[in-house]
Image 1 (tube, rainbow, N blue to C red):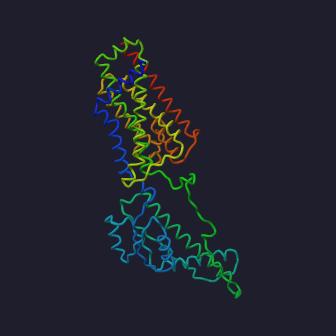
Image 2: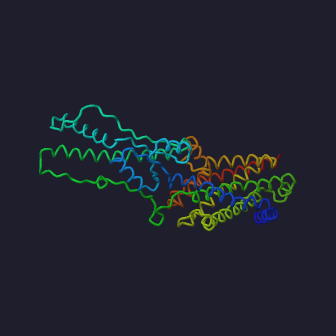
Image 3: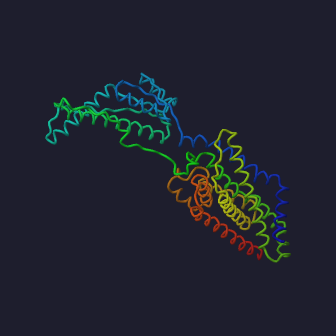
Amino acid sequence: MKILATIYKEFLLLIRDPGGMALIFIMPLALVIVMALVQDAPFRDYQEFRIDVLLIDNDTDSLSAKLKEAFNASRNVNLIILSDTVEATALVRSGKYKAAIIIPKDASNTLRKNTRQLITSIFSNFGLAADQTDSAELPIVTLEILLDPAIKANFQQTLSGAIEKIIATVQTGWVLEELQNQLSEGNAEAKKIDFDLSQIIQVSQRYASENKYQGLVLNSVQHNVPAWTMFAMFFILYPLAGNFIKEREEGSMLRLRLISGSQFPIISGKFAFYFIVCLVQFLMMILVGIFVMPFLGLSKLVLGEDVVLIFITASCVAMAATGYGILIAVYFRTAQQALSFGSISVVILSAIGGVWVPVYVMPEILQTLSQFSPMSWGLESFNDLFLRQASFQTILPNLLRLVGFALVTGTASIIVNNARTVE
């Protein structure tokens, strides 16, 4: 009964505090919507970017034709043909275009000669008859890529890698063709074989998900909804610590202590009430992800199929958040100390826990520190459930960490509060 009475008291305190209600329920909803909108473009940069690239074709031969064919088939690059190198340089320097590819004059012909010279050298090394070609050293063909100084590193690497792959494919084809030419020399009956290198080896990509969830990847909504939900849960310490310290300063806590003889029912009642509040926050944020995000032009939040595991994970996060809030409330003597330390510590835990940006794009030292953040444990569990359709055994270690964190902070809260009462 004492626990129920404490829950009811906390409920009355909360509904009589419009500012606290807004902080707990309205601000997190606004925050997750704003962050999802703000981070939508950066997430697309990593996953489905498309950039305009200038092409100055001074070759007009096989190499440039292959480059055009490959890039025209790409979903990530839109080629724009120009003839003036100076104009292209100015456009890239101004930032209007992110890159320009300059194919030098006679590039295809020089590559063919280099290929022929290479095959002849190989044949001669093995004592085989070969066509005599000019042994003079031929110039190296250099394709120049002009880059906007502000271009992102992943764009630069993708573009350079694509060009190198295309050139390697073209040159391999010419090597095989020249081999056939020299091997068939003097044999009128020999016929050249047409070949397609793509039929020898292909690269196929797919996500390691069930067929129903193919194509579902970490996007702005899938990241921000669970991430900022946990952030909101941990900020439960604001009303919790504020009310707790206010009761202590006004003497209400001492009177409750004298009546009940034990602080356990009071701590347990507060824990139970704010645990329920955290779950209500979670439910509201999930509904926003499912029903509101699509109206804003964002992706719909996909939960997966195991609702029970999602609820268990949310409960473990709520326990950890509530336990931490109570520890902050009982440890600090003034509301200013508690709220200042609490807000800064929650921001730090969220930053290293992957709330602001995914852990995998952080520096290595922060990736190591993230393993000690309860928000990282919760976020990884939600990603496992939402994106990977993981089993209970997969998320169990992180759930145990969250429950352990809640038990440690809760036990510490009782010990500290009893010590403060004796004082």
